Length: 455
Image (cartoon, rainbow, N blue to C red; front, top):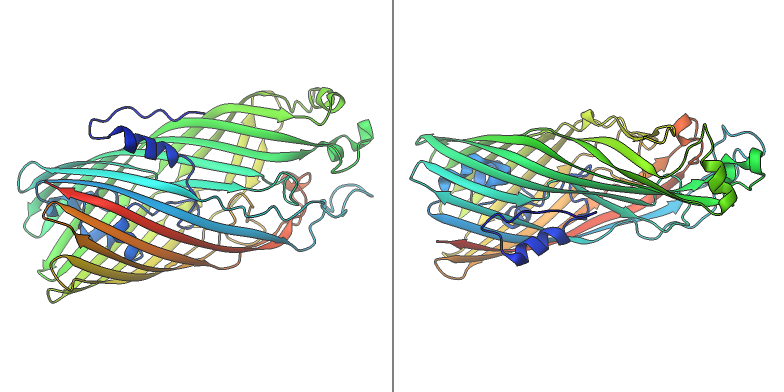
């Protein structure tokens, strides 16, 4: 599957290459959101992001902030995200709902290695002041993404082996200062989404009665790919009640994707392949569809300056994950839908931070955040997204090289509450996937660097 990115004038060939490298981003924030859209912001754990308006990345966090930028601003950033997700099996079995003597047999396989996949996530932003009150801009980013990959022989292979969601968001925006204390902003999102899902298929259990195959002894593999373009918008305002205080409110809309693509199957032998093509089964190559609704977010941020050198930062962000109830893949071949029930819940993210400017060239920052997981319980957790609550710790610094160029570097470590999976195998969707039981050791490290040019 290829990502098609049309030339946008301000994008050099190198930047286009970086955006394609980021086509398989890992998860940084809860769920499968990628909050890493600003290098400066990472250093304060994204506290105050909808109110700071320090650089052109405000196009993503709050387009109203562009009115605080003069002239032209170009920002190129890269984030290297290193997630870790190591599973430890704790007695997984074939579904107890399967007939004896198959039901309850231990699930074979290893622990799958490290399911986390490291990757670069770049962003590019450009803002142009048309006059002292009106500013336009353009952002290129990857606001959502997911990559997990296990060995094909791991104990949870029937639930998932490879999961990959990638997005590219093209976000033109404008901002207008309607009053010295109030700025408004709006943007439009043109978003590309692509997905790949792969898992083993236990043909040994499916055809145990008809072909005499052994459960877990005749594994095949299924892979589904799809893509789509979706559209949305973002709105924001920034209000300055006092010279020392700035408040920002920003909203990004839901974007609905109707992915269309193909399903491909691998069989252990020709006999199983022929049985899989029979009426009533139809696990064969063909077209497939799936719906993915990427959630809306609402952020409230504040910045309070304590003299010329210090500023305190705060942020509260709500994400509407509850719109994601299930992952359902529909096959044109006539095979039964593949369903993974999620029942996700809305989440809140809380962040606080501080900014210190010791002189005209340097700035230092630090932040803490608590990021809720949308996963309701261990039964609804899937190895495709082994997510749980996380705590952010972050530091960053920036240096003004000259009047035109700034260089920023930030680092964050995310402590993730050990995610537990306890699939009981009772539900119909898990009968052939197994009662997967175990615990993850998980964490994330993020290193980010950017270059800002003002002219």
